[in-house]
Amino acid sequence: METRKDIYTAAALETIESTEWDFIGAKTQQHLHSLHSYPARMIPQIPRKAILDYTKEGDLVLDPFAGCGTTLLEAILLGRDVIGVDSNPVACLISNAKIASYTPEDFAILKNFLEQLDHMLLDKNCKPSIPVYKNMEYWFAKDAIEELGKIKSCIYTLPNPCRILALCCLSAIIVRVSYQTSDTKYARKESEYLPGTSVKNFKAKLTSAIAHAEEISTAKRGDAKVLSLDGRRLEGIKDNSVKLIVTSPPYLNAYDYHKYHRHRMQWIDGDVAFARDREIGKHDTFTRKGATPEPYFADMELCFREWYRVLQKGGLCLVVIGDAIVSGQPVAVADTFITQMQKIGMHCERRWIRHLDINKKSFNQQSRIKKEHVILFRKN
Ligand SMILES: C[S@@+](CC[C@H](N)C(=O)[O-])C[C@H]1O[C@@H](n2cnc3c(N)ncnc32)[C@H](O)[C@@H]1O
Image (cartoon, rainbow, N blue to C red; front, top):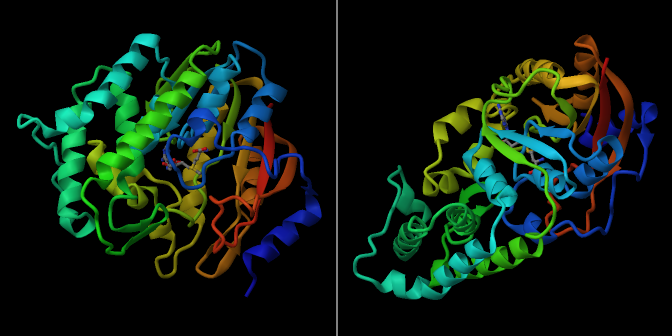
């Protein structure tokens, strides 16, 4: 049986194995990029390089699979306007927290909130705001549920955008204080819960988030918008308006964002069914007996047609994607994307193979994905 390594070896024969997009050893968690973990997030250096190389100030950039808002944050800090689209409410929350313009008054409110939090939590009028969903007690210790519920109630006393940042910090600590094994494993592993852990983690997270948001608060910025949408229909984005698309679409058969983020979605009152039913490429679907990759490519083609519609003539699109295995068979995802894009009028200008930084803590040592494709398209 061919392995994932073999797919890349085959692809490398036709493409340039290059270090241009590798950025090995680069700092990838600067300022607000460290706000919230996110499976398969892009390193910021990729959108930064693409935006600098292919756009100028004032141009509109789009990430139609925005995830944790890496492209959005890079774009606004480079003075570009940007739109991010994602169907997952956790992705939209993180993106909104990253692009918000926090004023000195907002920082004062947030710091005061941190100072007052212990007092607010002890107040007998502080009623925990606990989501109701199946098996919640199976995934959280009783004390964790009570603490998270009270923190959430306190967060809802804040005005926006302070509330968004604080809610994002709550989301960031959810997996760590639950019995879920990890961000990319939906399995239960019971461990002792020390009362106070959620409060301690939340306060630490919010403290560092405030400091990181302050670091970039005076930077000149472009405008940004986050749309909670299905990427197959980019409603509200005008025809021929976008100069550059930079994105890493969902990897075929690699993740289940709706599952890994399930508890987070509940705690932030996100629409779980919307995210689950729209997620493209999910592991759940493509690990079924007899699964084939066709439905994934059919979904992606709908997305590509929308990208073509919103891109300006001559506009560019940089896609970062990995190949896959479905039902034991290798799937050359990048090659198929190129064929599909060409069919709808998007010319493949260049392609590269980039190497992932295996020394990074975030890199999954178990994963066989050590390389991925970077493809640049132009709208004819
Ligand atoms: C590889 S991740 C993108 C990561 C992002 N580049 C970052 O740096 O965080 C793919 C994203 O596609 C989103 N997604 C999957 N299906 C979608 C759909 N139908 N519409 C919009 N977003 C979708 C997932 O929620 C996930 O956030």
